[in-house]
Structure formats: structure tokens, C-alpha cells
Image (cartoon, rainbow, N blue to C red; front, side, top):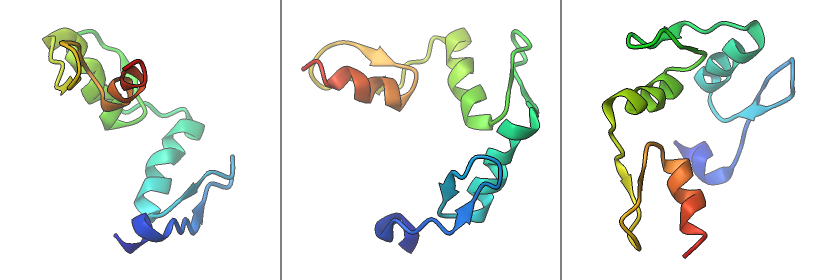
Length: 89
């Protein structure tokens, strides 16, 4: 938890140099380079390297848009899209 405040990122990917504050984040990242996509959508079969991307993808099928803009009626499937949208206000 402390590293989230200090910005320390002692765990580096040997393939691309990207750094992480926690070892488990580095291990999760390694799926990208290994080409592993162990998370599969049960609705359409699309595969993902990380569970969080599967969760976001599944909202396409459910229609869920849990990230609502406080300034207009728009809502989004993931927080990063909401953050990008908020710059228009």
C-alpha cells in the first residue's frame, strides 16, 4: 500500500522494462508477452490476457454501464473512458 503513495516500482519486466509496485502486478503483466489469454468470454468466446479486461468486455453483453458522468446523462463500461469523457466538460 505504501508504494502507491511513494511511487516506488521495484519490479521490472525483463521484456519491456515496464515497472510495477507489486510483484503480482508484474506476474499478471507477463501474460501479455507470453501471448497467454486464459480468460474467455462465455457469451462470445473472445479471450483476454487479464480478468479485468474480460469483466469490462462482458458489459457489452449485459449492457451494464456503471461509470456515470456527473455532468451529463452519459455512462460508460469502464472508468478510463469516463475519465477521458470528463475532459469535454
